[in-house]
Length: 308
Length: 308
Image 1 (cartoon, rainbow over the protein chains, first blue to last red):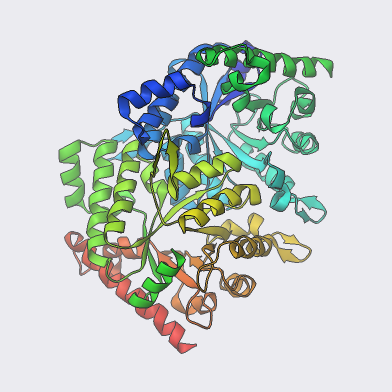
Image 2 (cartoon, one colour):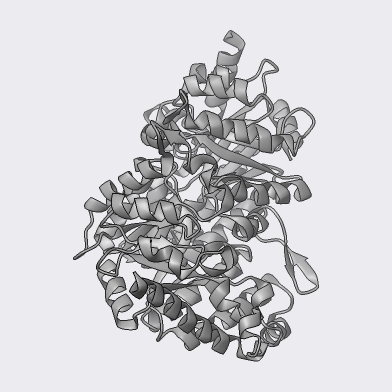
C-alpha cells in the first residue's frame, strides 16, 4: 500500500491528503435540509448529511489527490449511525481508487491492539469465515503504550500489505508538554521516531517503509530532525493551512527524491467555501471550492519544493 | 458520576470493574451456534454472539459490582455491527444501574477531542435538537498529545458530570519504553500524573475528582508513588488476574479511607469458566463461573486491604 501511495503521489504530482473531518457546521444548508427532511434532526439525519457532503467532495477532487484521511471522531460523535457514514465514505473512496488513511489514533495492548488492527486494517475470523470491517489502507496509531501496543498493528499490516502512521510530534500547541520533554538532552519524540524507524524496518516497501510517522507542519525544526532520523518512514504532516503551516515550512519533511512526506489539509479543503479566498463559490458549489483549494495547495507545496 | 461510583463501591463492598472485553474465543459454543444460525457467520452474527454473551454475564453479576468497562476494540473489530453490540451493552448496563467506563483510549486535539467526548460522554447538537450517542459514564483517554487533547474531554465532563481515566502508567510489559523515560531523574509517567492532578482540580466531586488515572497492577511501585502524587484522583487499575496482579500488590493504590482505586479484571471474570479453578462450571454456566470469580476477587482484594 505504501508503494501504491507513492505511485499515486507521483501520478497526481500532489503530496496531499484531504482530511475528511466534516463538522456539521461545514455542511451547507441545502444538504442539511435534505437529510433532516428525510431522517429528522437525528443521529441518522446528521450522519446522512455528513455522507452526502463527503460524496460531493470526493466526486470533485478524487482525480487530483492520492489519498484521503477520514477522522473517526467526526463520525463517532454520531454513534453507530455516524460509523455507518464512516464505512460508506471509506468504501466510496476505494471505489474511486483513493488510498484511505483512517485517522483513528488508536492504541492499546496485545490482543486489544490486535482487535483494533483487525477491525480497521485486517480481517476477523468468524466461525469458518473471515470478514473485514472498516478496511482502511493505513491507520494512525498512538505510541504511548510502547511496542506491545504497536507490534500487533505491524503484524496485521505485514499480512495485509497495509500501513501505519505513528504519532511522533503532533501539530497542536501543547504537543510539547510531554513530547518535548528532554531525556538525556533529546526530546521524547526523537526516541519515538527512532522506534518508528525500528518498527518500520520490519515491513519495507520498495523504497519506503509501510510504517510511517505523524509530524506536525507547525514544528518545522522537528520535521527536519525527524526526516534525518527516520529516512525510510513516510511522514504524514498535519497542520497545513488552518493550523498555520505553509508550503515553505514543509520542504524539510521531504527527502531529496522529492518524496517522503504527504501533507494533510482538512478544513482548508473541505470547508474552503467558507474562506474569504473562495467566497465567490456559493455554498451550493462547496465541492468546486474544495477543488480550487486542492489545486492551490498543490501549487504552494510544489512551488516550495522546486524553490529548494 | 464519581460520587455515584464511590457510593456503589461502598454499597457492594467491591472496588471492582468487570472488563467486558469479549473475544469470540471466550463465547461458549451454544451461544455462537444460536447467533450463527440466526445471522450467519457474519459480522452481524459475531456481534450478536458477543451481545448475548455479555447479557448473560451482566445478568449474573450486576448486583455484586459497581461498574463495568467495555473495551471498544473488541466491538470495533466487527465494524458497525460490533458497535451496535457496544451500544446495546452500554444501554443494558445502565438499565441495571451499573457505572459504565468506556475503555476507548481516545485522544486527539481540539475540536476532534471534543467530538470524541461528545460521542462517548456528551451530546451533539443536530439542527434544533441535542442527541447523545454512546453515552458512557467515564472514558479512558490517552495523554500523549498534552492538554489540548485532554481539556475538551474535561470540558464535556464538567457539563455532563462525567469522568475520565487518563493513561498514566499502563500494565503491559513494554509500558516503560516511553512512560519510564527519565526526565530530570523522574519517569515521564510522574509528569503525566501531576498533570492529571492539575486537570482533575478543575472538576471535583465530593471527595475525589471526576478525572482519574490508569495505573497498572503490574507496577505496584508506580502505584505507590502515583497514589501520593494524585491524592484526589481515582485510580483505575488494570492487570489484575490474567496479567499477573494480585490483591496484595494493590493495597498501595488505595488511600487510607479504603477508597481511591478500582481494580479491573476482564478475562479473569468473563472467561472464568475456562480456568482450572472454575472448570466445574460447564460452558453453559459461564455466567455462574463469572459470578464466582467476582466473589473470589472481592474477597482477595478486601482481604489484602484488611491485612494492611
